[in-house]
Image 1 (cartoon, helix red, strand yellow):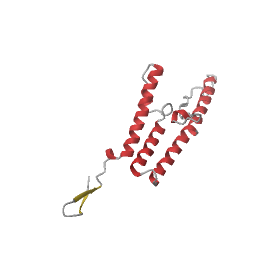
Image 2 (tube, rainbow, N blue to C red):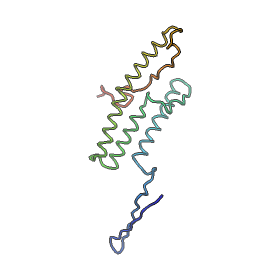
Image 3 (cartoon, rainbow, N blue to C red):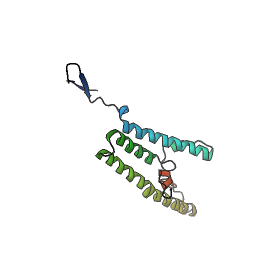
Length: 158
């Protein structure tokens, strides 16, 4: 990695070295926060599915939908980390907050309803006679979105 170093002398006794371009992937606090939140949410899904079904379902590590929402966890952690690092009054936090709101709105709106439509379409497929050309179609994924409690929004809470 090519780094530029500048040395600043502010007084006879103080010398400060500033490295430009030395930031690392692993020292990016907002990025690391988002990735850790994603990993925790996805791994929590693995354990909750084991608790409910008494079997390990490794698809839960990469699948979308269900509780907790890894999408919501990721963008929430990103927004909070940006706010803590850059300040909650800045434009960067505003962008992260708007992104988080859009992702959570999409999860409870478009994706949730697409999943419900998939349930209905799959039921229609199951009821087709075996000689129908679509009878052998692969079922659609039904668990696409989230209910408001799955993303951490409780509209009737006190």
